[in-house]
Image (cartoon, rainbow, N blue to C red; front, side):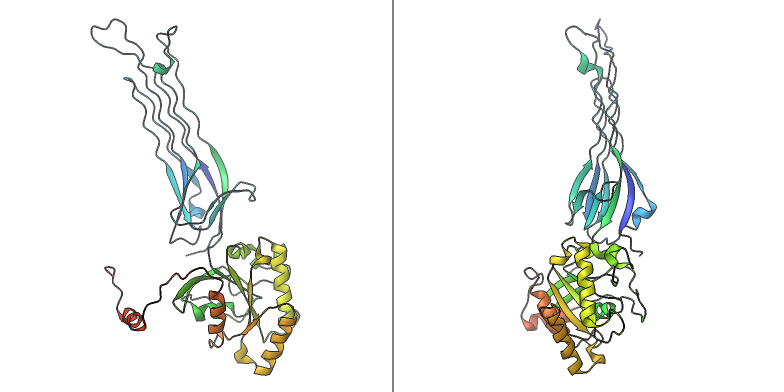
Length: 355
């Protein structure tokens, strides 16, 4: 499935149905009065956040959404049928923006959240409603109120508990593959990751979602590279893990310089990223000796890091301590811990849709 996090669509709520002009025709009734009913209300445009979606790719192929118009009124004071509402289902974390792509009109952050975005037009009045003491046989009626139409942008900000940042080739894909069920592409070239990756991490009876975004480079907040576009996907994270390659060489690749580059880009982007707690992980320690790792860790602490976690995404060394620190930033447990024997029995039992 292709990943798409922005889409422009056209939406229009339904127009109200016209009121009816009608007069009673009954046997033995010399003067039948007006009995035209009102028109039906037009359908609403409703946005609903649903679980199981993590892309807006469907809106690349379907971009126009129009709710049903209301039915017309009829004789015998019958009101027209209301137009059917149109429900647009989007992934959790989707924002609806005005055509300027800046004004947030709606933010859908919970599964099952439904919001009426455009209300359908009211139905027109039938001629019965115009009857008065001075107008006994009115022939006017209302045509129905028009619906509302507009272009909006949909922007998806993935909901994750933890965000993963770093320079290209810092080992983020290897790391997320090591600790989650994700199968991210790993390659020895810049920008191997072209779109955000989500992985579910289970650690010590706890469960959280980790988001990996493409690598950042100097100037990313101004549009350099591709990572700046995806920084919005970590705005909702509780904590960030900054992976730094201990083997990096060349300008901007020394650990302390790598730390400074990422910190500058997060601050330049804004969105609250500069204020989020960060865990610094010195990655690929399996390719360096312990003395070098200790020296670089001291440099990072001198550069502003509170604590440095030497890890290896390839071998798993040091990752447990890092995940322990991550859990400290998460809310109450999402998985209840069970007695050891019961847990092992549950793990061995095959899955069944009947439980």
